[in-house]
Length: 236
Length: 236
DNA sequence: ACAAAAGTGTTTTAGATACACCCATGC
DNA sequence: GCATGGGTGTATCTAAAACACTTTTGT
Image (cartoon, rainbow over all chains, first blue to last red):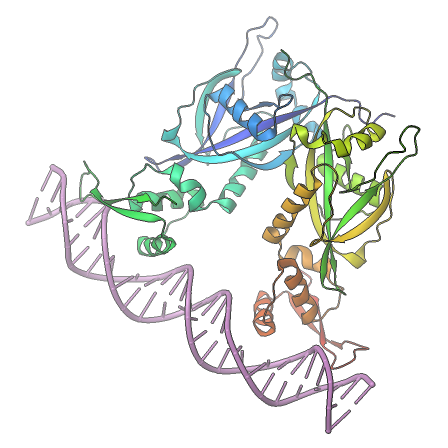
């Protein structure tokens, strides 16, 4: 009895968290699967899914995640972090995913082990546009994720817990706020990520001690009431 | 130009940290590769390597890690934790590894993406015995890891940092000390894992507050000097 | 009695939390 | 002048760190 005869594929999946500064929301970038209109596939029901696809020959995993994300959503240059590997043989065997696999994969029955990446960006920083087999690209609130293709709901869940565990101002905050921002902006960011509320006096004390902020002489323009001072991050 | 034609394999590799209570050391379990004595392979130079091998069809990754560890070292039932995935196309292309691949793999040139697992056990709890392509099984001090096959030195390094980051009494301590132990035993464990020294009074305060310990009426036997009280973990 | 490790508290410091009023500005 | 969010300080509590002497036991 042979034990290693089935074809196996490697894929990457990307969980892109988008911070919506306007509305104090945390969202996830999803694609909507495209119906290629091949004959005999009138029954195809598109699903939401994470941007993800097979790894190419000669391409390392981190590069692959960047390429795949770009092909499907036209987003590039993000600081993707690997956080786990999902390889249950059943993860691509569910009925709901059969048709998509037959439409898009040369070996629809092959096992697919996927390497999962995540990152966090300010929503306004990227302009996702659908590409490849993505019919559409959408943001969904992390509190209301729809049913996703394959095991992607599980992947999103694990990405969320990794995000909170590893969140740290140094790595992310610089990409999550406009260059010039108010302390309130920064506090809102922390509150959304950790799904909590913070006392502004204590928050300011904490982050001022970290000493990454530079107070500018400018103030906000066009506010309805008292404008706030602006800050930016110190350059290392 | 086809981009997904090369054969790809999935493997698992296990980093088993062994706590040596007697000598206050932290070690890693390695195998020594076996020379199968096939003709034309007199030049084979065995290397040290992590216990690891290809994932079977129909086997999920966690199960696979357990099976592979058992086949190579006859160790089973450990609480292995996945911590990363290594898939650089070059990770199995180094000259030093060519011969082994040709001896043991049906597709020696195939790309191999490996899923890495680690755990921490008390050395005395397991009796590793070589099996399969392991000529020998050895413990090596984490401070003096030799050159390993493939990218296994990198994998060990990342496992070490995950071990420290995720170490927590609840998960490990129960398997790392004898049922009845002294506070000094527990302190030694922490000191070895975090490679530091602790003040015993502060340490005791800290762990007593956690309230996982039960003070027994017994004392150590056969000590050279004053025997210490024994403790065990509370049952949840 | 002596050598060795066990056992034990207090003080200091730093960080986190709780909490409320005045101020500056745009309208 | 008033509505709104900006801006600010103190007191308390908790956790962590520094620190040294006495006690118990085996030999």
